[in-house]
Length: 287
Figure: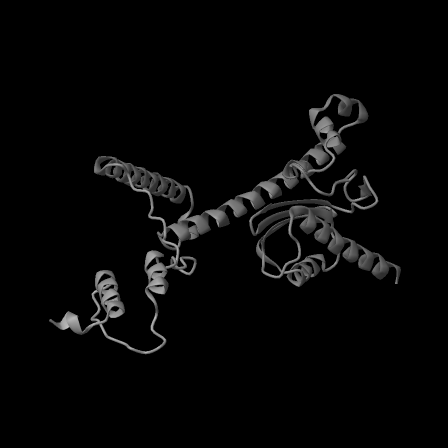
């Protein structure tokens, strides 16, 4: 037999290696041959665990519905809600288009209808402001044509004298406020800082600005130039005058790079513009 030619040590190695792994046996008579006592501990200890820190973390799978019926119900509900929303939007756009003259709607798409509505509302606002100024002028004329006795009981007289400004209804919460008495003659400020009525409302990047101040030479062109210098692009502008007063209704867009981050900041910048224009007008009159 082949095993008879093997020594006892080689026979022990053959038995150990044959039971541990299916690798073929090789005989080695070198002096550095490992003893059975050294081989046994190596086979008794399991290999060290592999490092799992380098493995990529598995992504968590999104939670799914418990059953297909629930998923289908949610999908159908979402479709119904979206369909109803689109239906209501189309109905509102149709009504909005019917309320505007055809000249304000160039095309029938949603953007054109909404843009035309903005233009139409601005035009109506300008008409309302102009009518308010004419109404105030007519009331003043009627009051001035009556004697002192009749004035005391006249409702028009009370309305004229009780109103600090003919455009007071257009200023709900102004950041700067003045009082206007005896239009054309006096223009007194309630505080040293305020030289005009200024109200600014800001929604995202669109600002609505109303200014009521005394009329000055080249005032409008200077305001427009000042707006551009602080990265405010004017989208709409209405101007209404009454005697020595002027009302500006401005719709502006806050462009990238503008340092004015709130309605109060914009109101303060506008007031600063008007103060510079006022000082230049005073210096021009003195010279």
